[in-house]
Length: 400
Ligand SMILES: Cc1ncc(COP(=O)(O)O)c(C=O)c1O
Image (tube, rainbow, N blue to C red; front, side):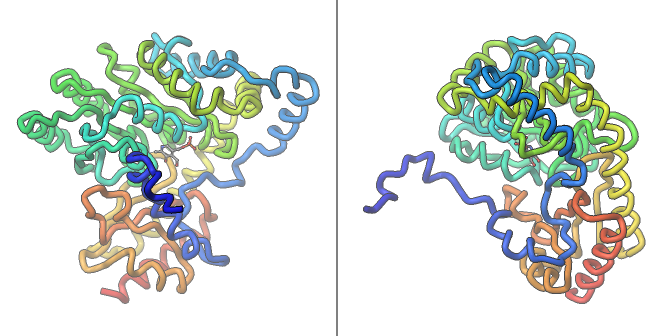
């Protein structure tokens, strides 16, 4: 059977994740890996989760092994509402919230409901591959806006908005990762959060604010979310427990103006009926016990030490041809190498020398980023980070 004949237009627009394609190279044993953008398993509260899960199954199986309403576990929704209110989103209530199977499902559901084929969505260059893919699966046309050290270049963005309006293809949706962005580590500044809201009102588009890293700050909390400042109902916020508890639980959420949340709930009904009930119950119990909040200071310390080791090792190189970001949180540093470097072509040789990263190009919708790469400081110990950065820089300097 020629199955391709049966594929829908949406299916045909799907592309494999370029990072997965690299996995046989970057996951080679013994390699110091700055590739995987995942939290360290050392941080997972495994014993607590084991005990909580056992108790939930033994004592409350009628609820925890049963279907539940699509919106999610009521206790969990209340914890999420309180969490967002404490961070400035004072008006958020249960009618605004939908639990999802990780932030990724929220991105998928939002893109499906807000974009028709050919609609224009704006993304940062560089940006998160899974977010780009969600927009592409909805067959949106993507326009890119360069990032600066304090987030997307708002003058260039306004220029893009104006141009798109003039050609009759206005931007409908902007995808923004406000804190410690994946892949760059960059945070959108306080003033730019207000500017993007102003642009959204003037140029009539909606904003997806994707924020899985906001709690992983190292010094001071990031500025209040775009969502919490919004008075016009133009922002959909996406949160996740993946980076603060464990990604295997697959629990995230979206917060949106009530009519949008109701739409997204409808879509979730056919997608999953309800997200994993046991997973949600585990996360709700972690919140009830205070464990989800109590562990945050240790988590920030854990990743902060690794960030420092990586930035110090990069600074020691004193290579004037290298530029890198200065993340105040999250898991990533973005490096622009010498212009002559092809980070994708160099990867196999670097892995043979014992160190791995993710090349920059897959994160850039305009095919730029050839000489750039993303370094995740989450997986390796500080000593291995220093050793890996030295090897990496030594090998790169040999290739120019
Ligand atoms: C920016 C961003 N958004 C969303 C996700 C997906 O997270 P989740 O595990 O909650 O689906 C990730 C995962 O790495 C991410 O980096």
